[in-house]
Structures are given as C-alpha cells and as structure tokens.
Amino acid sequence: MADMKGKRVLITGAAHGIGRSLCDQFAKEGCILVMTDITAEALEKAADELRTGGIKVHSFVVDVSKQTQVEKLAADVVKELGGLDILINNAGIGHNGEIVETPLATWKKLMDVNFWGPLYHIYAFLPHMIRQGSGQIVNVSSGQAFFRLPTWGPYAIIKLALGAFSELLRIELRKFGIQVTTVYPYMVNTGFYKDVEAGSLGTKLSMALLPLYSQTPQRVARIVFKAVKKKKSIEMVNVLNGVGKLSRVFTPVSNIVSAVTLMAMGKDVEALKKEMDLK
Image 1 (tube, helix red, strand yellow):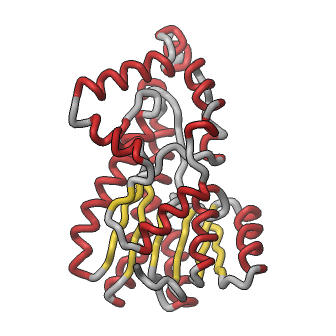
Image 2: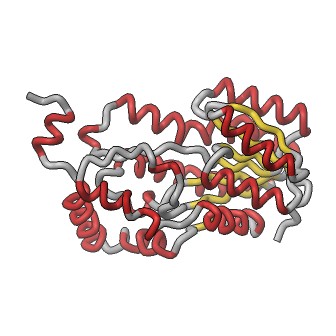
C-alpha cells in the first residue's frame, strides 16, 4: 500500500456525502486536502471542522461544469502546493425520469457536471502530473453503468460513458507513471437522492426504503480510500454491482430486470404524454 502522508489530494463535491467522508479518511493519513464544492457555506463549514483537528486544508468554491473555474483552480493549486498527487472526481448530480420525458436541457446539465466536470479536471491537472512523473486520478462512476435501469436512463448512460473513459485512460496513462482508479458505487444513503421527483409509486417506495438497502457514505469512503491506497484499477464497492455486471452477459436476465423495473417505477402512457405536454 502507498504511504499517504503528505500527499496532496483534491476532492470535488467535498462538502457533503461521500466527498466529505473521503476527506475524513485522507485527513487521518496526514494528507494535505484540497476541498472543492459549489456550495460555499457548506464547504467552509466542512473545511473548518477539519482545520480544527489540525488538518492542512485548502478550500475552493468551484462549479465543476465551468471549464474556466476548473482551470483557475488548477493554476491556484499548482501555485500554492506545487502540484497534485491525487485527484478524486467525486462531484455529481442525479436524475430520475424516463428518456422520453427528459428534456435536452437536463441532458446537458447531467453531461456538464457528471462527464465534462471530471474531464475538465483531468485535462487541467494532467500536464502537471505528467511533468512530475506520478499521480493518481480517481473517477467516481456508478453501479448504474451495469444495471442501466429504466427511469434512470440518462444518468446511467452518462455514468457508463465516464466509466469507459476512465478505464481506457488508465491504460493510456500507465506509461507516464500515472494510476487511474474507476469507482462504481452502489446505492449510497446521502442527500444525492433528496431532489428525486417520485413520479410513480415504485419510485416513492424505493426512495422511502433507501436506508434499508443502501450503504452509508462513511462505509463507501472507507472502501474507496483503501482502493486508492492499494492503487486498484477498478473498485466495485458492492458485490451487487458485480451481479449487475454479470447480468449484462446473460441478456434474458438483464431484460427481465429492466422489464420489472419499468413496470414498478415507470409512468403510464397518459402520465408521460402529460409530462411531455402532448395533446
């Protein structure tokens, strides 16, 4: 396992959920933290809590979907810290809805945050990692990359793209001495789902029962931290993600899962027509 003491670690979406819990994990190892989030008040509260414990923390309010803000962040980090050892692309937003009712504006927002956000960070910090001949990039995808459940299509599609990008990037960056870790969390009980609009009884029930079948952000953070320390290529986080991946091999199984999911969580035709404003 790698010695983490003194490592410069940047975590996006660091004020809440998995990101906040990851900060605790790296802080215990004596890392220098760079915390970013779009929510200024929550970010400063989290950063101050860590500073009280004697942790070296640099915090920046950043909208990951804005390339200019990310590039400025990279310039500031390199100037203040001399570079970066570990980049964790954790920030993300969710969306629940069938593809036909998802407007292009929502697709764009999901792409900007969940796909372009990580790419902006990677391209901003990669030159410095290449020059120093070392570094680790951690991209947080989702178990939806394997399950690809109806009513979560747009989110799953973009997270699948991020996972494929990350796994290919790992192969291409090895010659530079840079490690890439792709993380596939399962359901995590965080505020990530608080804005999910329950358009069906199945969705309402699944959100209400979330604490019973999901993992805590603290547990997920511990798993991810160990994966980073071991420099793992892929971290599946939960055995059920392995089941989801395996189900893709057996088409009848994945078709049944999709059909049952749509039946339980999908909207009827008239509801969809109303949502799409079709007369």
